[in-house]
Amino acid sequence: MTVSHEITVAAPPDRVYALLADAAGWPALFPPTVHAVATPLSDGEERLQLWATANGAVKSWTSLRILDPVARRITFRQEVSAPPVASMGGEWHVEEAADGHSRVVLTHTYRAIDDDPSGLAWIAEAVERNSVAELAALEAGALADPGIDFTFSDSVEFAGSARDAHAFIWDAQHWPARLPHVVGVELGEEPAGVQRLRMETLAKDGSSHTTESIRVSLPGLRIVYKQTRPPALLSVHTGRWTFEERDGLVTATSQHRVVLRPSAVVPVLGEGRTVADARTFVREALGANSLATLRHVAGVTA
Image (cartoon, rainbow, N blue to C red; front, top):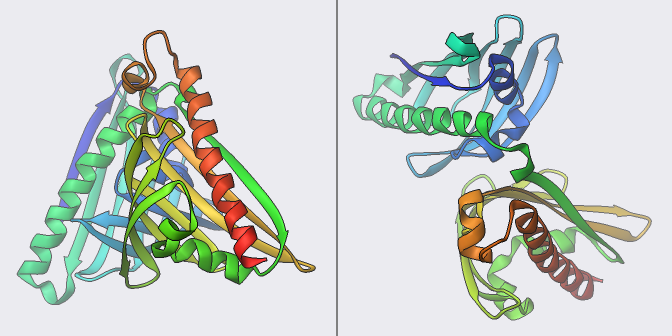
């Protein structure tokens, strides 16, 4: 089966192509993408490992990509697909349209395992849903103010075990008893090191906030996550926990990447508040929670 989707974006083609070429940035751009790891292979070719939602399920696969920045074309072919997909390939093509705008065409060609009709129907629904969401997000990302997207991190160093520190973060079902800012947790385990985490936390003003995340445990004692239900002030929140051990000392780091929702700044923070105020507020709020968690990790695992 072959299917195409397209959109015209009021942004220069080179800007749009750059967003597509930067696969590591896709979790902050595309709603279905949870995490992406791009490994260069040769000139213009890379291997891409992806975790993404499809029809509500978390799927993981690896693809080969060939990037042609001159033609603004990216072709892809899955090396290892996730059932019910037997094979999947396609391309992104960015063409210059009128007024310096961009015409983006996304094409998929796929087969289901054993050409099963129910499998084909599942894939067709996932491709349709994800393609529409990704093209809309690509347009929004190309037109967005760069100032609403930023990254920051906090670290704590302590004597202890990196493996124990990783276990503290991964075993989030214990957080309500361990972390004072966490009121409640619902944790669901899925195959291949994937979790779904629903968490209620307290802010400094005493208000509570519920967030939902997909978390993935990666080799090297790393945990990455993407909030599928971020706070009102954010349109995107992704992050990672890393734990490095050397000479008996552990460096535990919490990194965040957030995209602000400008329309929510005044409703959440009040009249007269700006995107700059929102950046400061988010940095302080998320940083405070991260440091509180990391200090508890240090206290429990040291």
